[in-house]
Image (cartoon, rainbow, N blue to C red; front, side):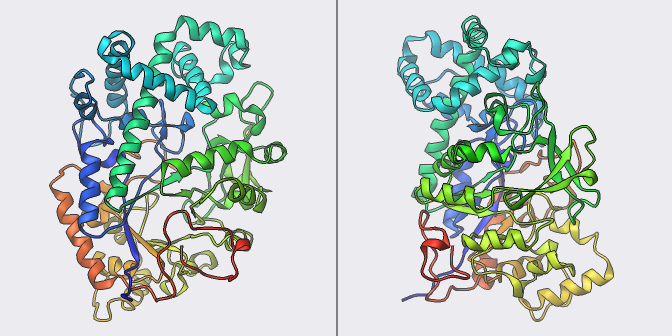
Length: 526
């Protein structure tokens, strides 16, 4: 039996892909990206959350945790499918200019919605939208109502400042708004209908090319979102709906002062009484969208950092117990073939690792986070778990070339000693050696950021934790750079990616189960 190469993948958000619409889309540029991966034996494309956004730029602050980001709808694919042409995008393209893209898309979706509403040639799409609306009613109805009312209220007013009847979801008041602003509501339905058509077309294309799309589920949702407006009892809010306790982290190696994210924490006791129904629906939806998905900030399921909204200083927060195994047990019982990866970085402890290990969950080892503290030891190569996923960096770290410029002489000596485990002849600490080190991991999966393969410095940084503005906007400036980056990765894989032992095959999606259902405990292949 031939030995099997461990899986490898590339981290690149959809928005970062090249293309003519101001940000990457689900159209030709995404299909080309999949083909480039497939042609070089790269099996995984990992992305950031693709949830519905509005005036927020961060993919971790969605207006609906169930909806899709309509900025990713590809207008060229729509034209090929019989939709009318839309106005060209004329805004900046070298970075993702969120305001310019939003303005362009609002105009385009208005035009398309008017066509779908009245054109004889759009009859099949009217039928498709009606079927989509019925099939997705459990989340779509609330999202469309929320988005419509929010737009009518000015587009930036949080829902807890709406008139009382709308804030409190009085059925007659909500129905009145929806009736007199049906054109706006129809546009939001169309956006979601088109996103989902194109998303599942891309998923099918990727599956045909044997490329997995790995998604991301943020642990928290924006307080000013359809999810919180429609499910107030699930969150720690005050009497009018403002967050009473805020999410965040204590000081850690990502941010010395800690972080306050501004979103409300959950009322886990209330969620437990419904057997975590909202969370189960959310995870089931992610399982439909992705081959596998990562739960961001998994440590909050063990214990979460709760910051008083009245004094939103992360250093004034406190640890509170999360749902722990109860939520995961319910999820595995109700969602067939659930495939979860976890982000277990930052201020983690034995409680987090025990919860992770009880379910045999793949976790993250990030080479840039190697250090001497207890919670940084897990990122050394010899401490990588076979069930883990190895990364050189991720969306919350600098590009590796930028990071190298920040290292002290002692750190440089430490990392040079480390990369010699993969490249014994290495004489200097450089990007090539660190990429080789990451790919040499015994982890079942190793992921590299596209920016590192393109050898980018500060200009390629995606997000700087603890900062507002200037994040999430990186794009590939020249599509012709992508084949060279993929060839570079393919050469690294051939030289440094280890073969798996015979008793540790790469699992197919859908085979992951809690260890309670397995005969053998301990590390296992994901």
